[in-house]
Image 1 (tube, rainbow, N blue to C red):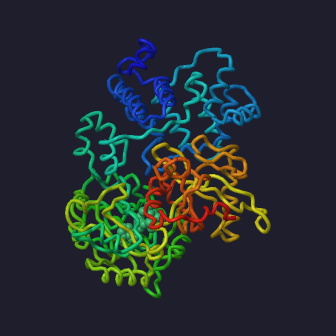
Image 2 (image 1 turned 120 degrees about the vertical axis):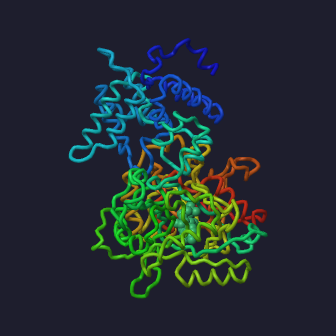
Image 3 (image 1 turned 90 degrees about the vertical axis):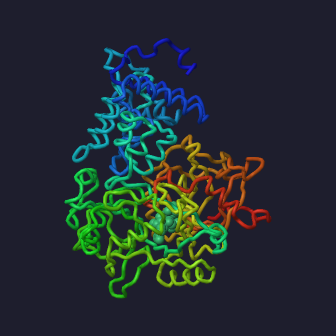
Length: 624
Ligand code: ATP
């Protein structure tokens, strides 16, 4: 607060109560944030600014928060800016009259397009003073850029960006790319049940933050971030965790997570109106399906929506179901492997063209007949689930479960799950408040036991591809190996973890080469944490976009990598964690880069390794 006060008496003379929030004011806050890495200070700058917005221009609170967290709309709205570096460079060039070659050279030297914009801008003579940008105006401008489609969309996008840039003063020009910061409780609680800023912010402005919980409850139409499980690698570990507490085991189906939302026509208009993703009339109502990522999957699974009426009981008026869609063998009447499901088209599927049939396996119920049921125990939710729906072979099933508490029973059930083509078991707390559904949490009340990691490292990792090495020998036309990283949400950085060259077929390598060549960048991003010695540099760097599932024999410390280095695994703080013998499993299309395995999870896996104290061989750095 003092910093801001001493700077100027009234830094924003144009910002009066009721006038739009000046974008320059937000940029000043961003600049102050840039000067520090301390979370508390960052939070303070944000809080100070948001209080000012609330006091002077509460109606701009929503766009202000959205710009602060680097979003234009809720995730499930599927709105993306869709502009790459080259488009922005073009716009900067056209706005400032500088040639693209000069801008590219600047970018190479400075490495931050925001600063390049500032530099370009300050060399441009200003003939007249354009109207200053407002937060609302920038949000709308970016929305316009994001929603342009059809013929000549790229050109129109450039025009819209130019419009924004020409109104920006030198200081704001660098900030037209939007910033990101973390949000603190109790907003987080409300957001995990109802991840919709458009609903939460106006409610908070009107009723105050302390009333959010009452006012913002989960509802059909707004997808929740799913509850996640912790990995384990021995049944005994499960028994230790749930000592003296009732738990239940379920088959762990290997398909795609799906959240099905439904409201019957004669139920509640309030809910029906809230179904933004609803694309399908189904079973005398409207329904939609969301992915683990809150993307609308309704166009991928029209066949599921069309069959809804066969398994939703008549008296069931509204629900939110947590399930797994799994490829189904009609002839053999059994589950098919995940790879089959992956061959399904993702968009605009027509039911008559569907070749891979799916069956829905429901394992949880979050909302039923107008009421959120997440706080009920799993035993109660399961009972409600079984009462509200009717299983139909090959269309809809309840996840197979078993409530036995003995080691042998669990072992037998695990073997059965594997015979039924499942991945293993999910073990869940059954009774009491701890068995409630915890949206967006990786909870110790849900444990997963996968058949193939009962020995070795507990889980596969989902890692981001940051760079690649040109192939040698047979692989000269493709990348032969890749540099992978985990994500550290505390510092918003990608920390390198291994090089990988195993597990790829020739065909996969070709596809990856095509995909990755499109997102190469000239130099590592400032938020890549990697060693800098020349011999350790990959030949090319990429935008942090693709997430791959990777298995490993075990984890070891290595001075060459940075993963988890700040998590206290190495007393000197110099070594990071690295994977030994990493093997590529598959691309995780359903995860974004910042949903990759976190540095903390990597550190947890490392600590869990039984043989941490025993000495290890050298890290398998050169797995080429
Ligand atoms: P995570 O979701 O934990 O990040 P992941 O996406 O790699 O990891 P897995 O580790 O394979 O997935 O396990 C969790 C997933 O298993 C769930 O997200 C869900 O899609 C699926 N699943 C299958 N059967 C069940 C079940 N009975 N209960 C809960 N989840 C299940």
